[in-house]
Amino acid sequence: MRQVRALVVGTLATGLVAFVFAVALAVVASAASLAFDARLASVRVVAVEHSGNEVATALGPGLLLLALAGGVLNLLAGEVMARRR
Amino acid sequence: MLDADDTIVLASGVRRDPAMLVDDVRCSRYPLNATAELVLDRAGEPLAEAVEELVERWGVTESTARHDVLRFAWTLNSSGLVNVRRTGPRRRRVLAWLRVALRTLPSGRLPEATVERREVDTRSVGRAVVSTARALGRRGSALAAAAFSVLCVIGSLAGNASVVAAAVVAGALGAAVLLHEGAHVAALRGVPAALLLVRGRVSVVHRPLGDSRALLVALAGPATPALAAAGLATASLWTGSALVALCACPAASHALAATVAGRDGRIACLLVTARSREEPA
Image 1 (tube, each protein chain N blue to C red):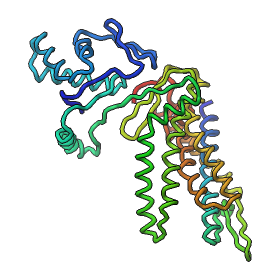
Image 2 (image 1 turned 135 degrees about the vertical axis):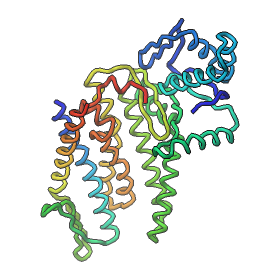
Image 3 (image 1 turned 135 degrees about the horizontal axis):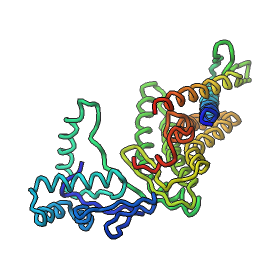
Image 4 (image 1 turned 120 degrees about the vertical axis):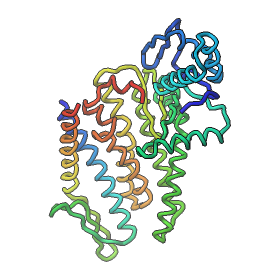
């Protein structure tokens, strides 16, 4: 039960933080007319592309990977804490 | 760090019974011996009065009586049972604090701060939010003011200072803290609760709760500002407003309090029992 909670809560919390910060980065970059493509290994996290007068913002599956990584990290940290008690 | 000029007063939700101190918020009772009763009988008067009475009644030396009274008052305050009212000259207090700080500095710690217990109203969600905002308003404003100063300095160094942007983001930071604690208190609807404030740290005390209610109370705090942040971020995608997107960031970081790095997360992940949450900070 503890492990499931740690994994779910960690995944949701990290996913939410990653989503908000990725959106903020993309919106600020768009406002400043900057283009970028942030990737985790080869998986896209967030990208902003300019073509002519159009700006395209893309959130990629890297966000899900980040969220899952956060969940696993939370689970591992929770296990270490539980064993030290 | 207390002084004989200071006074103690029973915190809201704490009352005296014969030979007993009762905390109605935590549903706890603490037995009192004769000395403890003597000190509490003089609540509202300078602690020096209790020291004098102790010397007269039991013939102990003044330094022993003073040490015992101050130590007992400190224990009560650390447990959030009494609030401390400072009455001595501010200059003397600052000097005493600096003396203690010099001693504790090598260990990398500041002198222990007193605990302030503030009442919150949990009869309805609205009352919970308003009473929390009233209790933490000054702290939230101070945090926002500090953040505003830092953001202005960073903006100036980066050569792109925007006072409006700094003010809005700093305001969002302060509001997120109020939202976090307000959500904890609102989730405690119908359960008597109080806030314990120690320096920048805030904790909510209440009676023991069942597992599911404890989970709800623990997660309500981090989740509320984080979900508000997700809403703001989505809105910024539609509107293209960088200011709205930046406002969402400090509120989103509250989600990390739901991981085991934060106390709320440790409760949610069953690493700290709900009972421990009621223990004083």
